Length: 288
Image (tube, rainbow, N blue to C red; front, side):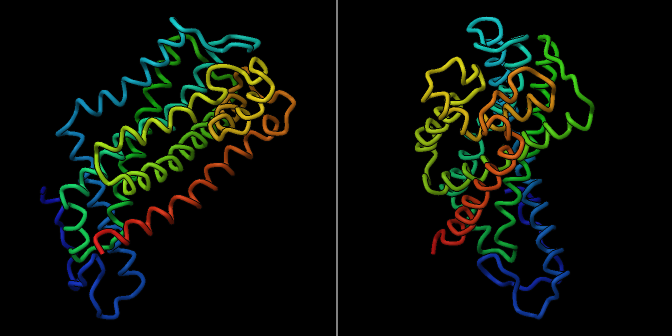
């Protein structure tokens, strides 16, 4: 275990099970401990990147390969009026934010299997710092992946046509979707418990990704399927991002499509409201 993992905070009691010991510490001190512990856990996750660069590169290259495959080989943007590349790239950005949770789930299950989390919980540190550190590192990696995908999309001919504020709004919606899916992954990883079960759980994410308007418009699908696709959280984000970027494939007349930006906020917030407390509760009950 690295030195960063065991960094102590001066003046903290040995509260066991991750809590500060008694001593009447004020709210400001508790907040300071929480931030320090969370940053320590974040540095621990970032240090793993340096030790495992291949895994990081694979996580970045895989969505790029999907984008190039659907752009040049399989084809995407069926049913769209306009440049299919400008329809496909925003959808792939949304898909990238929903996928890639396998590395997070593997990291959590490996820590569980090796007893690392039990050791953290026995130290005088804020219990939630482990989850905060994991989520912060994942969001940093997601931001890098989003930047890489945006650059590749620009290279294959995609452009955004609205101002910088709209583009930043689109990026914000994409990262919000990622943050929501991240807590789904953390919770499912603790439920799975073992790395060998992660792949089975990860497979469940694929239908959500492909049962969306990432690759084709709902109008090009059978009526019942198109209705299901329009209410997919990923479809809401993809449609909202296309609107903000000024790309084809925005509102099409249905309520879900016309209010895509609202749904692109409500869906992730609802997912976070469900899975964040579930993940925190599951973490608190580990090894009891």
